[in-house]
Image 1 (spheres, one colour):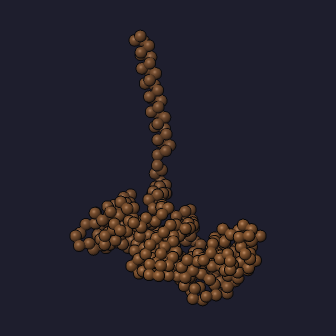
Image 2 (image 1 turned 90 degrees about the vertical axis):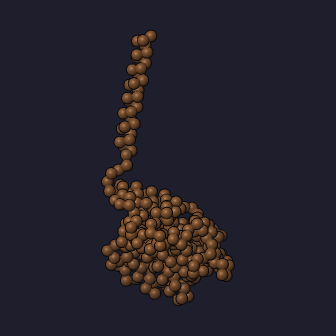
Image 3 (image 1 turned 135 degrees about the horizontal axis):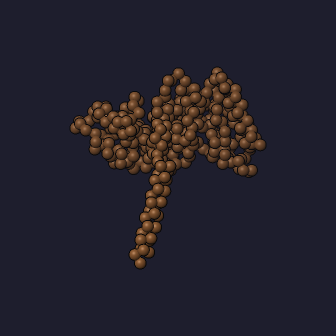
Length: 332
């Protein structure tokens, strides 16, 4: 019996040894990469998980004090020159009466408005949600938006929500630019408004530039009145508030019978490309996703402008031809 018990103990010990070697090997293969690029990729993934949301939880804004907003704005200002803003700098910019910002940073962390980055030093970064809250606070203060509803659209560069303006009970559209949210990393080389800049800063700042670009184009085209675009209402940081365009996106009307006059719609869309070119512009993304069509009247509204370039751009002719080919392909 002792001999048998000894063999059983030996087998169990060997099994534990094999299991421990297997776990060690697995951990070695699954260990987080140590290269700077890999660490940055993991950090960006964590930040994306912190900021990813299906619904904009604006209820958070009710729980923030004036000092919370001061600290959040201080993080935003500090990110102009810092990848992660050191705590002493946050305290200095915020100018709080009672000194420290630990309590306020804890609140912002709890609501995922900032991200704690302690890779090289103890600092904080603004999340997409934090940037959204700052933009919405400005809209509310100016009376442009009073409530935010459901998400009605999502693209590779933006999230679109419906909202309401209480002063005239008007439905509005709130578009948040989010450059870099997907693998759209070559944006610096494709946007002429980033030319001449050694660096455009972080993705938040680049999204702000894109929103300003869209706002400027929308205002000019709306005043021109020859091309139908949404009415521009307000712009702050990376967000644009515009009027609701009547109709449905063209891609939802591709089935036979959905359009009352397909030929008229095609002619209108090509005319839009020509009118833009006559004004020295090429849309560069003129397709069924960026055209709103009113089914009964076949009226076409153009949306999405930040990627537009000048006709003097070296690749303007190529982009113009690509836009027209895409439209013709959709209708054939």
